[in-house]
Amino acid sequence: MALRCGIVGLPNVGKSTIFNALTALSVPAENYPFCTIDPHVGIVELPDPRLDKLAEIFKPGKVTPAAVEFTDIAGLVRGASRGEGLGNQFLGQIRQVAAIIHVVRCFDDNNVTHVEGGVDPVRDAELIETELLLADLETLERRYSKAEKGLKSGVKKGHKEFDVIKRLLEHCNVGHRARTFKADEEEIAIVRSLHLLTRKPILYVANVDETEITHDKRGKLEQQLVEFAEKEGNMAIRLCGKLEQEIAVLPDDEKMMFLEEFNLPEPGLNKLIHTGFRLLELETFFTGGDVEVRAWTIKQGATAPEAAGEIHTDFQRGFIKAEVIKYNDLIRLGSEKAVKDAGLAKLQGKEYLVADGDCIYFHFNV
Image (cartoon, rainbow, N blue to C red; front, side, top):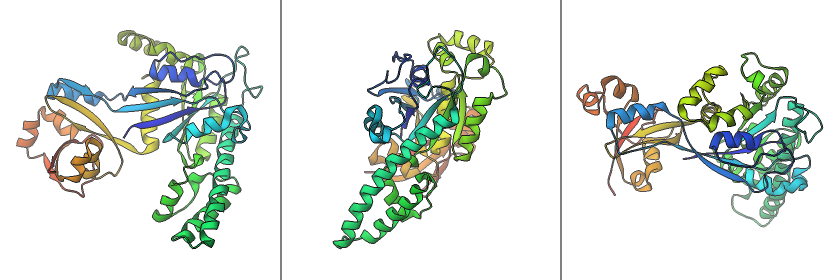
């Protein structure tokens, strides 16, 4: 399961600059709206120092980190839900991602124009949330009409679908996001089928300037965005897009010196991805041997057969047992054999819930 995130925001707030920092790809970042028209996609390795430790133990021929996919989606503007600024095309691109990274400008610079005429992070965040909500209302109204016709023609299960859509339409019509809609397990399946934009989790990125990123205390604009995100039940982090882009192109040894100079514990890429993991409730398990050590991404609470299915559907279909070694035990004892000798390698069945950091060998038969 890849972490697939769409980077959105108003035009000219630093989206493409941050995308460049994340992916080290040469995507244009210019001082005018709609520089990004076709979405740019970058596949990035998930930084995980545990892989290096496992590689020291297994000495594999290959080390494969988990992958993260970022899509740089063109800037949305006021009226996007009505097609302004090619809005319908861009809203369609947002539907394809699992999470939204909303970049919001939190710095003043007279040399960088703002499509709304001035910097106001809460207004900018609300503007895009409103456009996503308006697009969802349009989707719900279409589905409501379709469900109503199906109900009259006697479509099976039509009553349940109609009831859920009706309640969801009422919920969103008063300004609530789809992500706050209360539903049971059966109803959630109907809600998922609607692919609503305001149901996607959002990570707000406060794009600050170089002077502010070095201070622990939040600036006024950043604080406003953080408070807005918390009120909406979302997360917010700070980055300096310009600085991160400079860091991204440096050799590894120079990166550490640069980070120390600006008093930064790690590149923004790491912070962004790990926060994205928490946002989507994802975790990592490992497989290891002398051929390859590899990280795999799964949803929290996934069972052993579901984790096996991330490797290959045959593994899940023919699942017998999972031999599980805890990462900390493996690092502490130094080898797979030592863990087994200590009786710490456990055979687990179909009900086992995989934990973050588990090192697993799957037994299966197809």
